[in-house]
Amino acid sequence: MIDFRLEKKGDAISIVGGGHEIVFEMSDACSSIENDAIFAAWAVLPIGMRLNRRLIIDGFGDDVAAANATSLSRTWSTWLPARFSPVDLEFKHQAAPRSTSDVDLVLYSGGVDSCYHIMRRHRAGKRQAIVTMHGSGFEDEAFKTLVAKTAGFAEAYATKRMTVRTDIRRVYRDLGMTSDVTHGFALAATLFLMRSNYCSGSISADYSRTQEFLVFPWGTNSVTNAFFESTDFRMETRDLDVTRAEKLELISGDEIALRSLSFCTDRAARPHNCGRCTKCVRTKAMFLAALGDIPDIFIDRTMGCGIFDSINLARRSEVAFAVDLIAMARQRGTANLIPELDNLERRVRNSDPSPPGKRGILKRSGKFLGALVGAIVHKLTGSPGVDAIAPLLA
Image (cartoon, rainbow, N blue to C red; front, side):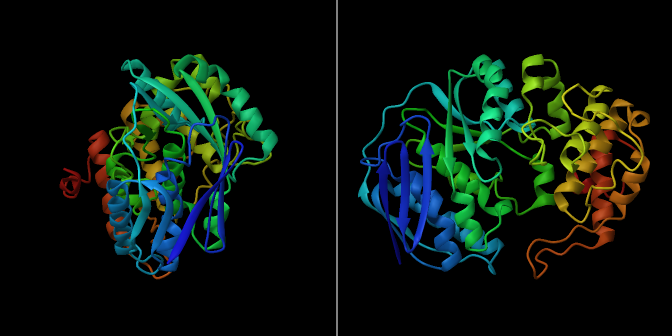
């Protein structure tokens, strides 16, 4: 058993227990550890799962959250039994019901997914406050620049903007847990920490519902995210009906949103977009596919020979995005604008993405993957030659 307690120092809250400490530092004091410790359950649940230890939270929670945490651990231990074990979690005290408003809390990173999500909600007339996490991906000055770069977007689309700094990913890494699986816990913990009197928490899906099957098991997915719920608050996952390439059309129509985009993986360049890293390259290509042009938001806007050489198709996430790109270009008739797209498509059809885990869970054959890729392209574009396998996606 691991007994966790909460310690508050100014606008920082620490979750401490079993030799572990997770720190959250907030721009706004939106949580009181005297009556709300549910966020801590999501933060420490991977620790219990990893170490196979029952968890006790010395704070206020409710039976719904405790039961969902236990169910969540069972789900992940079913999918990844070599990494995780099912564990029980309980709170020492029962939380009182909260009052809520008609404003939702939305996570905002500055990337394509969250930008699209917030714009879509805004167009639907929904009110929202936004939270940006400062994790291990950004140095302090780069994060300050990101906040400044996205300030106009936040002002236009949100009632309020907050930030949270946390070392939660470092704690997970120290226990041998990778962010591809654990990032959902970090997002849920942040939303529940900052929930105050908000109605619900909301995030944008990284992948469409179809793509989820290719990248499974991804840390934020429509199955496990549904467990991040208490009696009066939950984390909702939206935009499962669209792919990343499809999201660009809405964003490109708003200059403020377009200029706010930050998705680069080059630490030296971000929060600006270098135009050369893998993520920048495929985003440039997606802009070409969807809109026929590359906006002036990249340091390097060129698309020369060998542009896709850095895309590692042994990664299932890259296959998902490559298929998305190819399908959009074929559908919009923009394939001729993208150098070496035909070669990328050949590589995709011959790829065999690495299965999750060291032992090859859910190992896929190259033959089946080729059929699956063909089916996705057929479903989105109606291109001939793969009709026999298309019913897989019906």
